[in-house]
Length: 88
Image 1 (cartoon, rainbow, N blue to C red):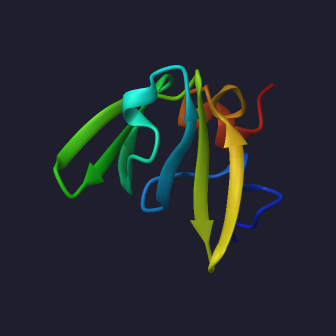
Image 2: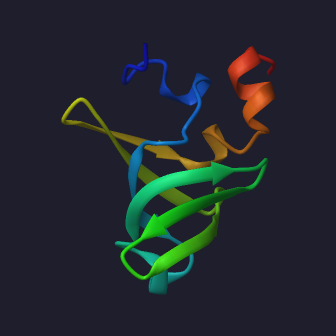
């Protein structure tokens, strides 16, 4: 079960997310549902279509059971398999 404490070790696909800080001011506030992820990118389904956003250089807010969890992109900048498997 995904919780605020173990979010960085779980699959992110299907979660609602929003960028709350970024080195690119144009994407702050971008939000939607995660439809795919790679080692360094998250693909978000937004109201204006799919957007590919780099994980690093951004601070992400995820919504889990009506609770907001904030993570720096560096905490999730691994391949999903490595993050889920618990490799450091």
